[in-house]
Length: 426
Image (tube, rainbow, N blue to C red; front, side, top):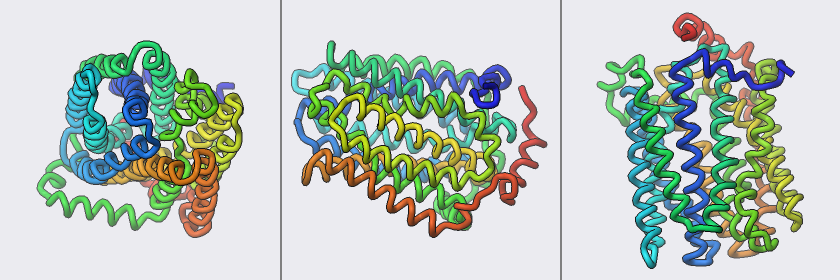
């Protein structure tokens, strides 16, 4: 079993990683409460598929701009400072949502503005957070560290929506926002204890024009067909087959409003199983193929979930989808963290944010719009089938990505040499 179970010893081995992990665990739990509360509140105020889906439209533009700019900043400033400052800003946004929820007639526009602001903050936060991990962890420990970071999010994804569903349905949406505010306070306190992590080429990158620096990062990503494959496949899978915006309506249609939290948590149940047995990833060298097959499995499972009206079967296939998505995510993170040089890591982390965030946000709008034009079931099933088709085309077209082998890839080999020289265990 030791060959498969997740390696938690890294939390003891690296102090700063332990603080970062704990902070993220608490913060993400609170964020998941808000992620359930916001669409639920919009549904209560409007009872509209489209109104819930439109939230994704408000999130996309800020994420594109600030995600890319956040990547430039991550290569030019202290990454620790970026993380705790953005967490503090998110705290203020959550306070705004809490205040709005106390009004006798809460404003829907406030929810849309908050979604846009959260998206901007996330765009600034994620490149620094994503590029910080390889600076803390040695090359050989990165796959297991990726799994622990995924476990961190999965615990929040399971506990947050499940508890949010109970609190919101039995008390009110304000309770979800209140827990989020508390989580950010604790998170910021923990992050302040992490040592500084300035970018290695800080002086050079700071003096460069931000736009020129961004273009340089995009050109580097475009030159790496193996990296482009990870972005394209995940973007397609999430855009066409992300059904989250439909969950409040889906639970109503099968007369199971009480199970709304389980709709949100189902995918994470499958994902956490993969994470807890993820040590095998170190022994599988064909990372590109793993991403492709996992994305195809995601699309198939989503289509099957939409084909049934039985709650247990829907939850089961959503869990299978989550497991497939987790396999894809772990191998994508392995490709990114084990082959990107540090001086480009922030900017490419910004591109990564877009690849795995714009898809779900656009997917909310696609799912909501198609459900409004046709039906919920048609939206879910067709989305999964479109995912299978587009991912299949991408896999056929991107040979370097499909054949990515971590033991022979020139960028992975170079990264290993540098990391083993520079990062001793702490």
